Image (tube, rainbow over all chains, first blue to last red; front, side, top):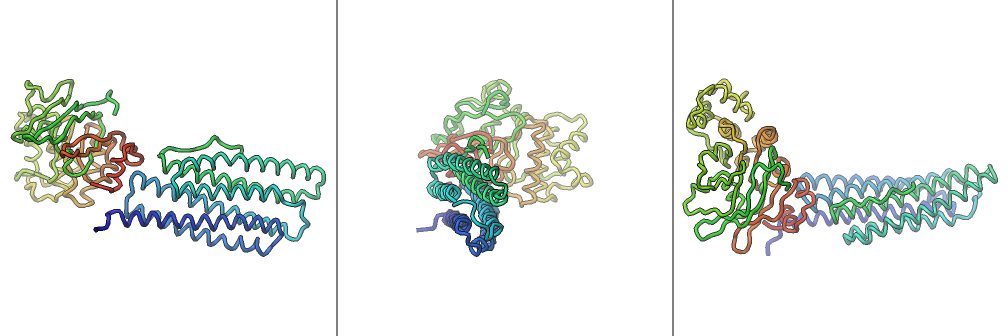
Length: 224
Length: 257
């Protein structure tokens, strides 16, 4: 049987998607590790997250180069075109999530050996939900499933709610004891980074909605 | 497609070559000062449809047309209509450049002369050659044979010849398929410029060309009896980024055809 004329192109599209999943997995691990390092005050791990961000950046470049080459060689149309455009957007979002992990790694270094302000509970919870949103947004991509993508959009409210809670709690601590201001601010930054990670996951979900349906899936603008 | 600016409308058009039905029940409107691309797999009736738009099919024995092609509120297939008059208003450019074995000047002046439009003929020739983006390349050699021009120049000469009689609509059947990439780009860029004054309908096999030059796209396919029919038409951006019919999607992404 002769090879279908699309066999090569389809193969390359599948490979690209697999590369994006690899990048997604690198980013997810970086985010989890950055928060775990912060919680357990493991400076070595914080430093590793910062260093490993280069790998994420390289992977992004690699995927973008492949997308551009595919556009140049195949001149894609319709779903093929939307797919590659979505891949490019998703890659940028993932790379930026990696930057947030790096940012949390730097906060880990800044906090250094200072005594913990309080046991971290809500921030690791935010991290879990944000990472879960990331995983499911990529799951929606693989399955081309708008329902999963829409659920990711909804879940952003949970992360926003937790961020509100963390914010109020930290402001209260700062008002009560100005000596906590520096450490509280560091934690607020970390929480803010996680809030952004969740936002980027909703971007990916929106790209899936665009890819599958050809229409934009923007949510109402969230508070952050 | 909205009907309000339509300069030409096809209504329930079917064409037969003897017993064979080449296209069936096509209804489609062409908007003024736009480029409309007709795309579809080989044999789907694109060229047949195009040739109906200025009664070129009259030249094929056994060709029979049903339905209407309305231009200026008149069915051009009305028995009272003179096909030569139709072709003055609706000109055609063919796949292979077909200049006459005459001088560059005479090629452009030809249509004017046979239609008795001999006043200011030099001005008309210059204007047409300028509109076809060929003037600067040929102004010093108007007496030379058209056969000395390159393929791309010959095709622009044929466009100038069509423009000389000042049609309103220009039909183009694969106008760049015999040209190299530079010649192709020149024709495509010319098509964009011509929409200022003309309405263009173009048949092309080149999907990227359709996407580049056209405002509207109509996609045709053929049924099991090999009769061509319209699948989907609309704004070119929509057809190529987000077609509504899965047959269109399959065709433009190369899954069949």
